[in-house]
Amino acid sequence: MRAEDEARPKGSPDSMGPTPYVARHENSASPVTRHASRPKIAVYWTGSCGGCDVSFLEVGEAIVDILSQVEIVFWPALADPKREDLEAMPPGSIDVALINGTIRTEENVEMVELLREKAKLVVAYGACAHLGGVPSLANLSTREEILGEVLGEGWRRGPPPGGPEEDAPPDLLPRALPLSQVVRVDYTVPGCPPPAGLIGEFFNAFLSGEMPEPGYVFAKAKALCEECPRTREERVLKRIVRPHELLPDPEECLLDQGLICLGPVTRGGCNAACPQAGMPCTGCLGPTPKAGDPGLAMISALASLVRAGEEGEEAIPKEDEILDQLVDLIGTLYKYGVPTFCPLSPERERAGVRGKASPSPVPSQPGRGRRKGGAA
Ligand code: SF4
Ligand code: SF4
Image 1 (tube, protein in one colour):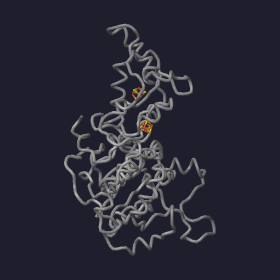
Image 2: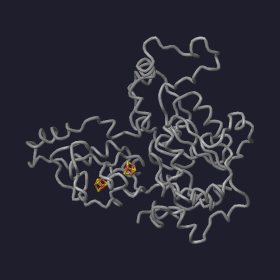
Image 3: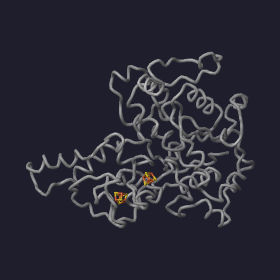
């Protein structure tokens, strides 16, 4: 076992199966006993599809138990709190704020800065907050190109014609950003949306007050392939196919069959949900610390697999032909991480970039040792 995985919090998917929170509770080891009072939580979405908010239900009946052990002080999808309610809270009065979505508007920035001020801990919840997510593929176009395409060439900022100024929609930022490029992030629960096991792992750690070191990503440091039940033989790759072009063998590795599965470079933690369902992994849990840049790591892996049956330089043109079958390079290799891994051209960068906290693009996996009382 690797050092990073040895340092995983108790109740991790490694040790407790797909619904660790339930298992822990059934063993009468309720983590809530560490807290004198119910910790206060906030949940907020920025630029997201809403799936992360719904994902909390993935833990099944355990959600009732979890919610009974916390006090929800701000969660727009559940109640109807207003920004003024949040503004009125003392700094540091929220124990943890779970924020999902990409940061796309001025309002997103203001709200996450407010939550950062009010919360002891901020968690980037889901792939959009973690790395930028699917909405940040929009960074391949400028803000002006997007607005012109969607609203027509005559678009203008401000309220609808004849409407009051306060009806004006918030301005779009020049580009979408992951949460960590706007405020300091303490922990990450990755995924699109996060899988039940990792949500359970987070709540086990949080409610027990046994949080890992700040910076920890609640997913495995080892690659998804290691938990995938498909048989991988690292066969020579003679063609690359897309999912709609193939009915895959149910037991053979999808990459061996020519589908671009990002399992070799993606963190484990979802029990290889997509390959088990016959679909290649698209990398929503983010790259392993070892992989770093997922696209470069995957190209490197592919380069070693692609052989046209010949050795030496004669093979190179044919190998290039095979790699050319890889269409939609950024959408395939960086589906969730354009703002984290794909720098903009200088011209697009000049369109304006906002960022206040830009750590290493790949969150480290400290996790060594454990910090007590994270939620208290
Ligand atoms: S199907 Fe994907 S995750 Fe499973 S072994 Fe093959 S490459 Fe790895
Ligand atoms: S298999 Fe890949 S894309 Fe699917 S849930 Fe797991 S990490 Fe995400």
